Image (spheres, rainbow, N blue to C red):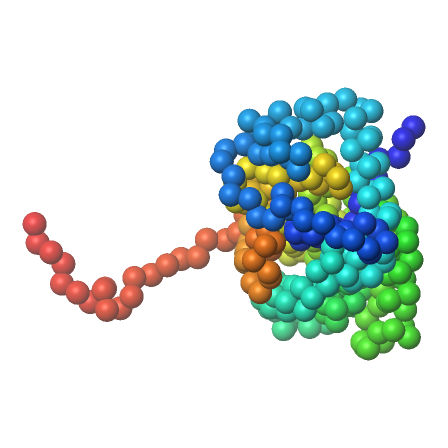
Length: 314
């Protein structure tokens, strides 16, 4: 039986690479289909093939079990040839690390204030970093806010680099904060422990999952959330439809496409935010906070200036 594997989000790129070099870091060549695409309905792939809809694309790419196995095998194989460094996992765009972390931190702070108020200051916070790569997001962000962070990454040399990067000697955090578990498991096969996580962070990896595996993962992972727990999904956004990358076996979906999948998962958007400060040639990046519970409606009252106005007699 072929092991279906998912490559790292940290390949991170989520970011669209305008230039793709070989794995030895020598010559780079222009790859115009990795820039933002102003598409009509449907989608296209990196060979220029157009599809009428996502169903047509998925039927061709993973229509039977052997083809689906090949999809995941080639995806993880691509990232096994990438250097385990920030620049490597960010596709040569290591300089976006700082604005990425800064924006994510501001977003995370609003969630922590909303969902885990100061009265719950003694709550032991635990996060799961999906597609953790070399531990970039955990080291620069999550481990500073969570007592424990588990890392999920199917590319073994990335995960070994994460172990080293997150060793106590390489961290400046409180002793009560640590990287606890390192899972070398593909996302589509992972089931979290029930009720373990306050936040499940999924960044630049979900594009490697088929629609069915996307929905299946989130439905399983719901059981891994604590009460008031959230998913955070940060990903590339196509303007419309989708863009299929044939080389690393990933799909960049539109905001509408994502919302349709969220609905299938039984998830609701709690907050969302557009990433700012990235180079113009990259896809738009959006971050969503998702909850299994329907967000409470806010009761809106009319401003006093309006409530004191005389009514119109008809």
